[in-house]
Length: 284
Image 1 (tube, rainbow, N blue to C red):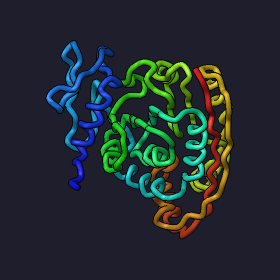
Image 2 (cartoon, rainbow, N blue to C red):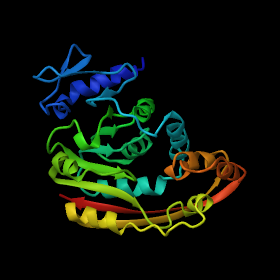
Image 3 (tube, rainbow, N blue to C red):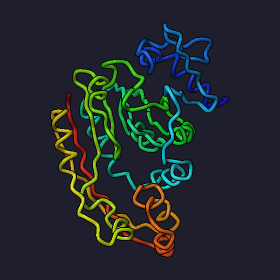
């Protein structure tokens, strides 16, 4: 059987789920025309990329997240490093309903959403959104029933009350957009770091580091959503090179590090790393 190209997979997804897409400029319904462009009634046009994604940004955006970072993230997240968290997210999601429309808000290179979909029961329609085109381009290599979209979380190009679940994994939030997107009984699952999350890496770069406090993040979530459940997940992972360097490269913790500090880390052959997060589950 002939495998579909990335672009053809993207076209078929849009054909099947055209009603989900709205124009990021005027917020009118988008329509697929000539199997190559999404067009709204006001004439705003967005072409489906040859690499199999949809660019639904009004203007290009520059971020610090480059190809090297997303390759490192794929190396780490494509393994078992985050598996207990993905397992718990899938377990929580499967408690609620069989068929699901899900969004990964800030999906990066797609590993989390791809793994989640494989663990969810029933029919699953997936949307991966990120403002970094480099991450979305890498995500298209993952064969799943997903639309990979370059988009701004402050202006999501998806229809009102069209989504059952939003995952927001160690990424910034836009709660007003999340409330707009979610169905009346929809759920937001937000993963936030606790004080011991990757503390070994922080110690390598910051001798006088302050203890991390996520209380403000929790309070903001609680102000916008009704928390119905929270789950703390904590475990240790022994990491060796070159994955240890990949982990450091994919985190903003190393962005302000000196060459001397980076060299010191590269000389470490193995390190136990603590993963410590809380999953907040909320209804609008």
